[in-house]
Length: 125
Image 1 (cartoon, rainbow, N blue to C red):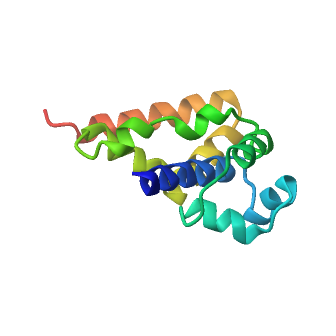
Image 2 (cartoon, one colour):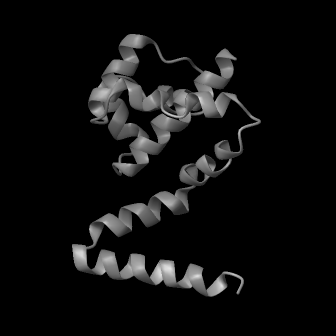
């Protein structure tokens, strides 16, 4: 179970880092460690200490609780809601989210309306 928690924290670390557009090197410099350590945290090979998690949360402008969000569902493999969460760990999803939030409000609304209409076109009649 501890390994599952380490994997979850690592995934959340990677997701937040990518959402902010930071490289492993940039995050490592902010926290005062080597980028290889960030790599090991992200893949769950190394555990993140409480003090280090606190510093990572500060560097990533989030709370420590962020890293534990969804942990219960992730540990319970039988929960159907756990599978869609993996969508957010894909690079293309993060790229899409970043591009979306770089748009002004009006183009964002138009893009969202377009995406919803495309989904409605595929729905069975």
